[in-house]
Image (cartoon, rainbow, N blue to C red):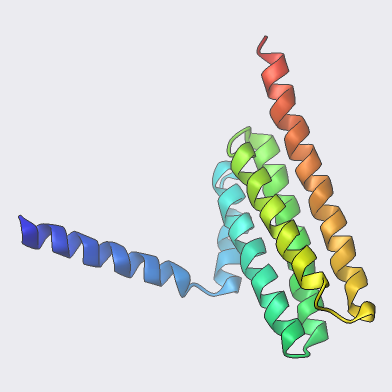
Length: 146
């Protein structure tokens, strides 16, 4: 019985490692082709990973790659927001994650040169708009059931 438990834990760990090694392109493809309720989580995962990548690119002085990653953050955050609104599922999780990504971008912006801050500011504004729409949808759902 202990052996079976150990094997299940090892297999579970391997599955998690395989997911972490999934390339960003594979993750984008999965997010684009997923059902709306699954698209929320996948698109947010893309946005989080691209926000981390943008931070690393800026730190390495690769401004063009960082800007492309920031554009992906905005695109996939919007996709997640649209999917959450469409499905009515995972609204709260989406709002929380979008807020966390916006905070991460805001922290990143403080480390950048003035010239590099504008695209990050625009991205933060887009994320706040998505977040506001998610909050509106969450509270509209509560009112419509009364």
